[in-house]
Length: 231
Image (cartoon, rainbow, N blue to C red; front, side):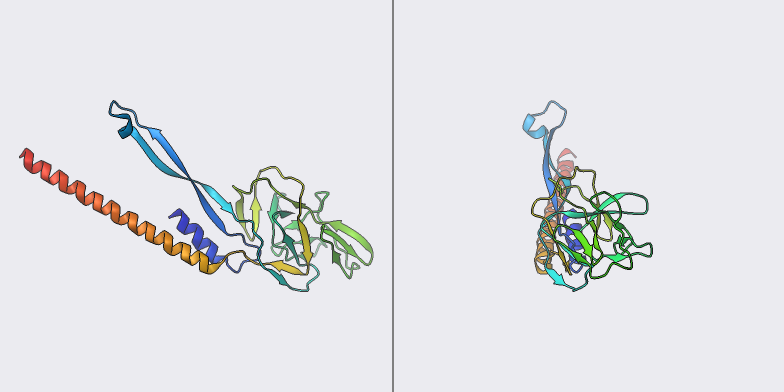
């Protein structure tokens, strides 16, 4: 059921900008029940839902020719800040300038520069150019530099909606990460593959359900026969 939920969410976000498909990680858990019976009969094996891991493979690049649109090439994130001062991460590079003159996401989160401060763009700043290292320039000179980060491990990223993530994992300097101006990254979900995975999970679920029903009927039959013998 957990796998089915994740696959359904992947399919629902097949057209979401910069969405990363996810997969569930399971882990075997073996423990020994207390008692005096044979050890083999006291050992119980279970499967634990260990977590969800995003696939950081790049989505297709879609040119927009909008100078404030950027796409990340390679794994990593841009850093943003919400109204509560919370540090969040995004790959959705569809930016705009707010009424206050700050570079923000579509939902109003401020884009942070390398100095951990919002990036301000004045009305006089025209012909904006964003370099692959995130440096923003206009005809009046350098404006700031978009902060980009990477993680050693992307497991455990908490989704906050609107293509935003939160994590308390330590950041590290970027390696091989660059920005592409005038483009947006598409979702890396392959709908056909995800539908195929969904069918496979459904069949496995139905097979397990049939096995449990058969076991329940065998158990009920054994109890019925035992009661007749005792009578």
